[in-house]
Each structure stands twice: as C-alpha cells, then as structure tokens.
Amino acid sequence: MKAPLPRKFRLFGRDTRTDRVVPPSGAAAWLTLLTAAAMAFLAVFALALSVATGRLADRWSEALANGATVRISAPADQMATQTQRVLDILSVTPGVETARALDPAETQALLSPWFGPDLPVASLPIPQLIDIQETPQGFDAEGLRLRLSAEVPGATLDDHQRWRRPLVAAADRMRMLGLISLALIGAAMAAMVTLAAMAALSANGQVIRTLRLIGARDGYVARAFVRRFTTRTLTGAAAGTAVAMTAIALMPSAGDAGGFLTDIAFQGAEWLWPLTIPPLAAIVAFVATRTAALRSLRTVL
Image 1 (cartoon, one colour):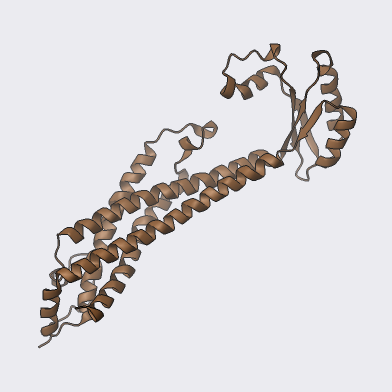
Image 2 (spheres, helix red, strand yellow):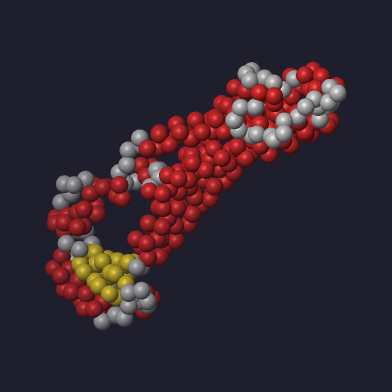
C-alpha cells in the first residue's frame, strides 16, 4: 500500500502531512533560522554600502565634472593685479561660463574643516582661488594652462580631472566590493542551509526508510524538507532584514555635507531594495535544499 500524497504541494502555509516528515525543532532548525537571520543582516549592510558608494561616486562625478579652479600664488602687492588679469583671460576663453574670485570668507569656509573656524585667512599667505564653471562643451584646458603660464606665471589651473578619476574609480570599486559581498553572503547561506538539510536528513534516516517501506517516493520526502527549510530560511531572513533596516534607519545622518561613513543609508525608493533579500534567501534555500535532499536520498539513505 502506498502512502497517500497530497494533491497539491504547498510551499508556505500549514501542511500537517508533510510537516511530520521533518521535526519542527532541533539543532538543524535553529541553525537554519540563525544563519538566515545573520546572513540577511549582513546582506542589508552590504547592500547599503553598495548603494551609498554608488551615490557617492555620482555625487563626486557631478560636483567635479563641470568645474575647475585657478590658484594664484603671488606677493600681496601683486595679488589683486594678477587676479584681475586671470579673470580677464577667463572672460574671453571659449567654454568658460562663469569665473569668480573667492572672497576670504569662502576660503576660510573651505579650510575650516582642517584648520578650524578661527583661521586668520587675511594674515596668512594663502593663494587666491578662482572658481570656474564650464559650459557643457568645456574648454581647452591645455591651451588655457599655457596661456596662464605665459601671462600670469603665478597662476595654476586645476581642471579636477586628476582628482575626479581616482575618487570615482575608488567609489566604483567599493560598490563592486559590496556586490561581491552580497554574492558571497548568498553562497555562504546556501552552504549552511545545505549542511543543515543534510544533517536533518541523516537524523531522520529511520523515518525516511519507514516511509519508503510504505510506498512514499523520494520526491515526497524531498518536498517536505524543501518546504520546511525554505520556510525557516524566509522567517530568519525576514527577521534579520528587519533588524538591519531598523539599525540603518537609526544611524545618524550628516546630510549632503557629511562624510562617507555617516551616509551609509538608504534614501527614498532605495528602501525597497532590502525587502528583496528575504525572497531571494528563500529561493536560495529552495534550490540548495532540493539539490541536497535529492542527492542524499539517492546516494545515502
């Protein structure tokens, strides 16, 4: 006589017939829940790191893309004359939209994060800075650099290219590291769920042999394990994701002027991304458990 199989296999919800095949508690159950919760927690932070670095790369690229700076180092009695000369050159340079000399208050604001707000800018030999905003077409940086060196020897052009490329490249690499971390977390979760499923299969070997004697097929037993471990993984991942999202939401934010470490958070629609982690974890558990169960049932039990 064959054991009656359920007409329709249900992955979620209560199914008392298949639940009897896998024990509801034990080391394997707690291992699966804790592993899923821990990996989901780490995955949320890896995702936040990837999103934040991508946002940082975009911000740096936009901030430095259409700007340049001229630095003028000259004696105090010649500073005004050379500054005006540079402004005259920039006013007739194709591709330069606006050019203006920074006043002492703006220079002090730029230096205050390193030297404090009480830096005596007026009494120090600080170079004069001229901020340049380019048109979308841009200007000939090399030609402008040659003209400035010929007519205003104390002027140096910085078109931000040598600063922008390494910063954006570093941010892009950090974003890639975040994505690689997500992949490694998924692989580790699959490995742990596989080990837990194999341990549960071995622990219930006698029950499985009894089911086989009364006609139950391996597919029925495998579905029972798949259902149990997928549900456990989804529950643990949902708990870990909720805790991680709460922790990120409670992190202090320094706004647009803040540093990178205070900006590891989600913004707007980005909060929807962590919600994909529990379903993805359940898919990983489904594939890993099904593969492990069918292999174990064929070769061991």
